[in-house]
Amino acid sequence: MSLFRRRPKLPAGLRPELEADERVLAWASVDEGAAVVVTNRGLWLPGQGRLGWHDIHKAAWSGRELRVVPAEVAEVRESYAVLVDAPPVSFLLLEPGEVPDQVRARVTRSVAYTAHHPLPQGGVRVVGRRVSGVDGLSWAVRYDSGTPVDSEPVIKVTDELVTQAQNALAPPP
Image (cartoon, rainbow, N blue to C red; front, top):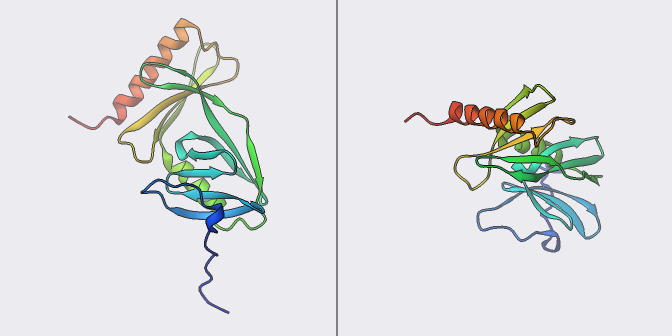
């Protein structure tokens, strides 16, 4: 018995097409012929390609099941995107290894700024996220359910909130 157990290497048939500077950090089988693969750039999901860490709204680990809620762009505005939840995806991981810890750590690390703001009707979360391989932050908002997202006053206040956040994190001149 070895003191240093190493997880078996990801089989070549399960290895996604990685970018030149992308490396596998952890993986877990979901069934024969498919695996969830964690890289420095994102989370590879069977049959769905890679989700960048900044593209994941929520990730939860039940102890057996990894549930991921991707972000979907509903609208692109001048300096930010309006995001909504895409349909969640779940994978049963009987031998998860480091996958749940890596997912949690990397999604959390991608968030550089987050603040929720109440609006006269509803609310909005402003988020600045790090995108692997890209300088600067990617800015987005996510409105609370019931917020009139197309209302001119809501758009104006949202623009101001995003600008304030961007200015707060801008490097000094």
